Image 1 (cartoon, helix red, strand yellow):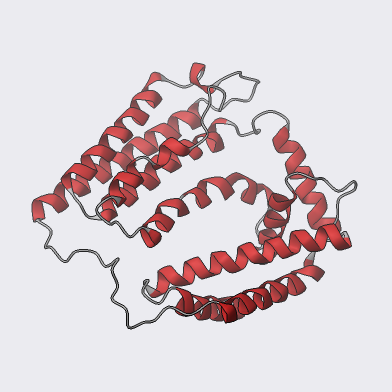
Image 2 (tube, helix red, strand yellow):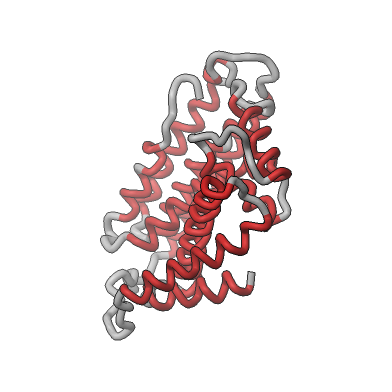
Length: 275
């Protein structure tokens, strides 16, 4: 972990000097983890194993590749002005109070949606959740959208829009956690069994052509964070989805348009009548 933190700090300082230190560390760590999992996947297909014995070589190979890429990439000068810096216009007290109230109401809506999902947890086959859930869930989603628009209208500061976007995303992705305690269909059982086998034996036979990137990522995190496969499978999508607003904030130069971009972010979730 010390090596990851140091390398994250190094790459962040070289490539993202104008970002906040914590922000550039998060981005760099995500980049390192992504490169490591890619190397782990490549190692699995070439050698047949993706286990604790390949974690070290995968990490070192990924770091070596990033350092080589860094040597061919010019570092960003720290003398350039930070054009992404937010405006220093003072925020009115009434704006803070209204924004706080809107975010608080959005939190209550999110909790209500997830509680309803838990109360209507499906332990039997259902074709679509919308025939099982109460009508208040639909009103909750509609209210979250309205609150997101109001939050954008009341304040130009990105923080309320970030929080509202995260709440909207979690209200959608977290729905399946409590609504489908036994997973949706048979795919969840197959994926978890494959990941568990890969974690314990280091290989799968025959080698699957699909999902192996997810499998190596989940098993890698299970070893490094000492978390169960079940826990990672349940929380991986809801938690990583919350990184989308953070990535947009860190990489969007047009700060005036950022709240509108965050407002439309939940629309990109692949919803269907069945999930």
